[in-house]
Image (cartoon, rainbow, N blue to C red; front, side):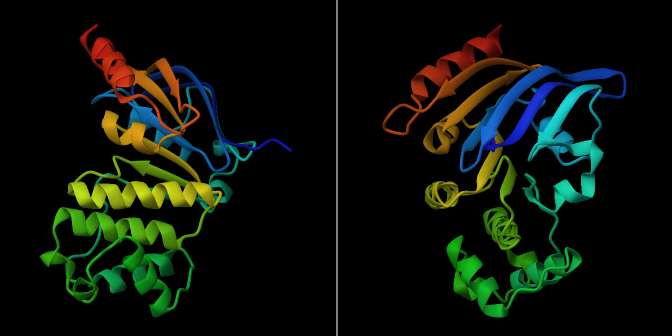
Amino acid sequence: MSNIVVEARNLSVMRGQTPVLSDINFEVRKGEVFALLGGNGAGKSTTLHTFLGLLPPQSGEAILFGKAVHSDVASVRSKVAYLPEAATLYGHLTAIENIEYFLSLAGIKKSSNEIVQALDRVSLQKEAHNQNMERYSKGMRQKTAIALALLRETPVLFLDEPTSGLDPVAIDEFNQLITSLAAAGTTIVMVTHDVYGACQVAHRIALLRRGALVGSFEADEGGKIDTETVHAAFAERAAS
């Protein structure tokens, strides 16, 4: 049985009359962290939205667990947790209340203790758990959204600029969390413009520019991807 979980196969996508992705191909295996790296307008978020069934391919296929996403969107979404760059959470509710509400929409029941453990895992201060989120910083809101994604306990995580709004300490904590999730078998696809962050956690990086894949990088035996090499390629492609 193949251990390929996520696959783009000759995938092309348009928004209106504008081509956004052009014949891209990649595979992500079980327990792998795959980073799609690119600047603004490269097509990163469009890639995730296609795998979530929000955008149809013009040609080719977005495949999860061997099944084309658009052949059964509901089934695919049940196996995926998605963290957008700016998660929509309710300011008049606490972190715990937000999580309880959004889990209920997904038909998931978690105990208060399980929710607290998830918030602890993402290092949200205990005194903030029962504060209304209108008092939260962007980083605190992001941590709450990450905890919500974890509580879905899906085999695949899609992350869109996941460290946006986090301070350096929180980013280090997030990187450690992603590494531990992958080691436990979760497959993670993250899109980012952060070269350093991608090199810290990814097993493989694909460089996306104007909807086309223009480079790929793989971790060495020590589990790291050379930041300078990726940065040089990113800068070269951005300037061309």
